[in-house]
Amino acid sequence: MALRDILNSGVKLIMIGGKGGVGKTTCAAAIAFHMAMEGRRVLIISSDPTPSLSDIFERNIGSHEVRIHETCELYGLEISSDIVLIRWKDRFGKEIHEVISSFADVDYDFVDYIGTAPGIEEEYMLSFIIELVESNKYDLVVWDTAPAGHTLRLLKLPQLFLKHMEAATKFYMNIYSYFEKLKEAVRLGESKRTLLEIIGSWEALAERIVRFIRDRTLTEYIIVTIPEALGVILTERIIKDFQEHGLYVDSIVINHVIEHEDCEFHRIRKEMQRQYISMMRGQYRNVDIMELYLMPYEIKGLERIEKISQVLFKTQG
Image 1 (cartoon, rainbow, N blue to C red):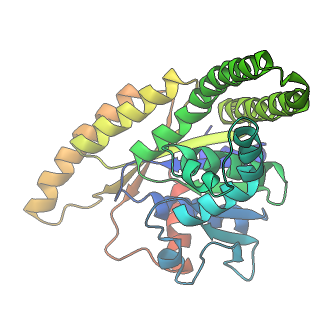
Image 2: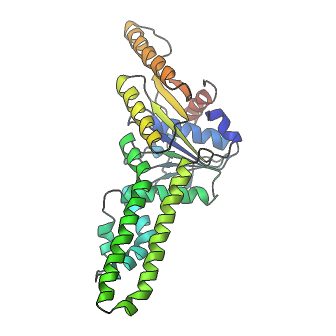
Image 3: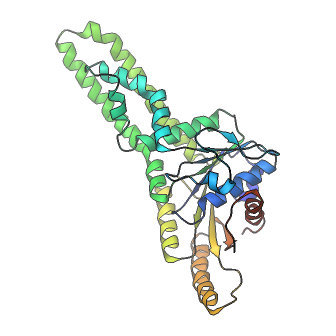
């Protein structure tokens, strides 16, 4: 789906991905601003380990939703790892402790240890954002994701989580079987049912996340890249990995394109860029491709963000 068509669609989540330094935050800010100016209530979220929404909008945003623009419904949120883990503990801590303490004597602090496990942060990030989307508090959520490797791990997690839950269910059942043999079946009977209900709720959550991120009527994926070898290679990798997990990139923004060659340096770079742009257009004929020209100034503040939005929503094809 082209960006220009999103206003007339039911898309609820736009994910902006790509490698670091290619202008993901700039594009995310421009898209969110445009949608808000068109009358939508929009939240832009950054999960980058070094979030820069505050820098680009020139105002403090932080870990709580704040309104960015006075004349349109544009809100921002920067989520750090610490905040993610705090919210994850609030959401799942009690259930996890209930599961573990039903067959092992552990303090509640053990939940903090579980929270350091690889993938927990990414796992909860997806859950948190989709719950935000489904709350209908906002018409649209624009997600400025972390650099590509982090995002790819995140998108694979729901399926990995489901596999883990299948194994965990068998593990817990074996433990209960052992305790039953010790004639503690009566004491554990109620916990067993509670455990299965908890595990079932986790499985249902993972399945719901998978359905949502694969639903092309609800979720839009946009890759930001640059017309250089590394940018082209990484874009190819992202699209291939997405397709392997039932996900599809809808649009590619090619950033930092030289518009006018006013010297030998720019002439050579423009010729190099043209080859890579032609390569991507030939390879991704079913993807909406946009070119964003290299600007002579930093993109900071609403006035310059608006100029980028005008380019993105005008020059497509």
